Amino acid sequence: MASGSRRLGVKAFRFAAVGIVNTVVDMAVFALLVTASSAPLFANLLAWLVAVSFSYALNSRWSFDRSEQLSEARSFGRFITLGALISLGVSSGAIAMLTETIGLWPAKILGVAVAAVLNFIAARWSIENRLR
Image (tube, rainbow, N blue to C red; front, side, top):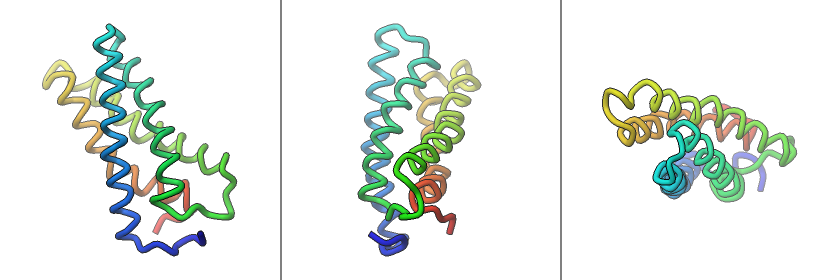
């Protein structure tokens, strides 16, 4: 599909739908690992790896119009790199800095919520090769 053929509102709606499912995947893997006595930051890393792979698969095929100028590998590389900086960085930072104050789960949820908006912009750039 040619870049830009879906309207921005449709892309945002689809991105949000994928994000909801993706958040469930992230939280489920995180909970499973924490329950199995994994360190919270390690559990967050592994949950993020599973969730970001799932997110790319859905967003690059359903939410956004993949740019023909980008190879699948380059698009995925951008998605992972920005995802690491944004979602993994924000959620890990929230866990590291806020767990003592507000608890593990509120810190994790807050990190996921803050990263969601930034991830829309990053996903659009990494998949469609556009910022606007």
